Length: 80
Image (cartoon, rainbow, N blue to C red; front, side, top):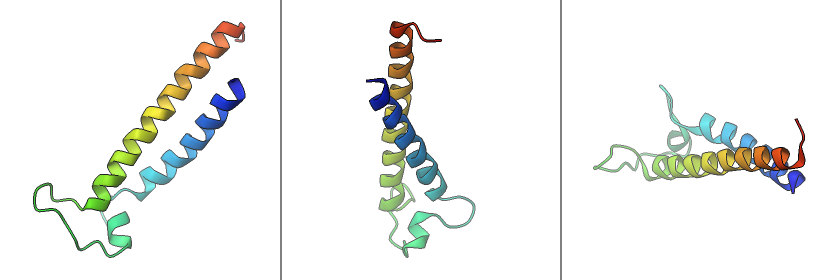
């Protein structure tokens, strides 16, 4: 179980790095990379950016949960 939680933590950590780097900074972001001229009139951001935000938040929640699970597993095993 510890190995599975560790694998999830590693995968989500790498995915978080990629997702954060894909966000729009001062210059262009992921939407500009793929010709994102399509913007929403309500939020001012493109559909791609909003979906990227949602994916980043979901990945962050999974990342945080895997840290909690690993902490509980190590505590129950008496490690650390």
